[in-house]
Image (tube, rainbow, N blue to C red; front, side):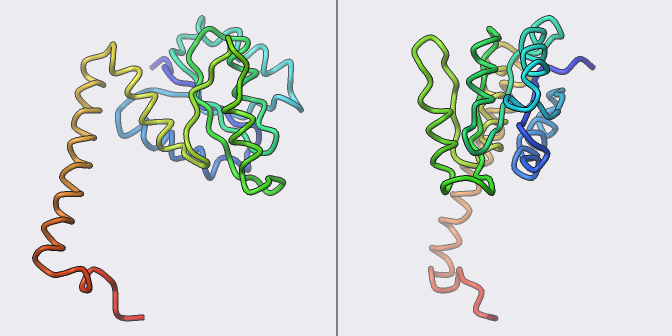
Length: 173
């Protein structure tokens, strides 16, 4: 099956975060590819990846990066596909704010949709939502996913009414 989404990250150390996007796409049955593309250490690979993405069948790219977090913006500057940036709190990060701002503050003309710090799951949901706007099967799965979120909250509301808030906590520790 041809991948529809590219999930890329600047380093394999980002995989622990970016795995959540892949897990979500798997849940929705959306084919994807996942690889490491470093804006700083493999710039030629980055250009090749971004410039061939559409021809390879990708419909959008989720790009995660920590620290200076140039990868999502650089990918967006090369491809015409939508890019979803995932800022990652890395070992050399300033509590992740450097990553958030590096991805969020793109210049006019080079938009990058940006999710929360370490928010790869939301990137997967956003990717499914974008694809679901044009693919009824995926769109229906997104609707069902959101309905399930509603059911989970309403179940909690009923449990609070029934058991009280003090019984919502584990008292065994």
